[in-house]
Length: 196
Picture 1: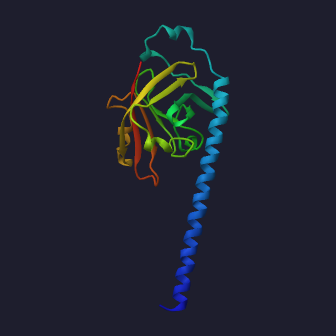
Picture 2 (picture 1 turned 90 degrees about the horizontal axis):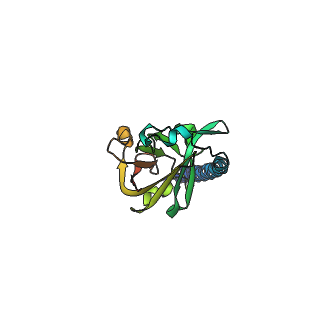
Picture 3 (picture 1 turned 180 degrees about the horizontal axis):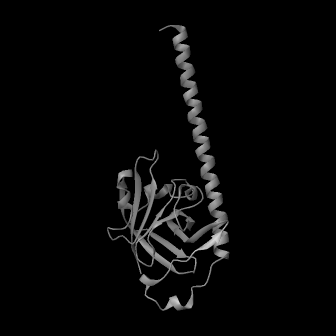
C-alpha cells in the first residue's frame, strides 16, 4: 500500500471519527434541550391544573373526557410519572414528530377507556431508561384535572416499525409506554396493567 493510499485512508478515518463525535454532541445537546423544555412545561402544567367538571364526576370512567390544557401553544393531557426512574414528564394530547422533541405524547387511548398509549423519544431525560425498567414497577398517570391512575409494569416487548398497529392496546393492556431503541430500527414497548 502506498503512502498516499495510507494517508487517504487515515484522513477518511479521522473524518468519520469527527462526524461521529459531532453527531454524538448534537444528540446530547438535543436530549438536554428536550429535558429542559419538559421540565418547564411540567411546572406550568401543575400551576394550570383545572378542576374536573362536576357533571363528569358522576359518569362511568368510559364516558369521561380526557381534558387538556394549553401551554405555549400546545395541548397537554397530564403527567406520566415513574418514581423508580425519577421521571415526571408532561404528556402532549396528540403525538407528532415535532411534539416528541418537547415531551412524551399520547399516541392513542385514554386512562378512562383503559387503553392509554404514550410514546417518547429515547432521550435520557425522557424514555431511554424503559429498556432496563424492572417488571412490577409503579407508573402513574395524572390528568390535568387531577385524577391519578396507578399502573404496574408487567411485560416488555420489542416491536418493529411494521408492527405499528400493535402499539395500540388491542391486546387489552391498560397502559403502554414506548420508545425507539438506539438506531430506531425497533421499539421498546412496556405494557402495564392498572392497579386500583
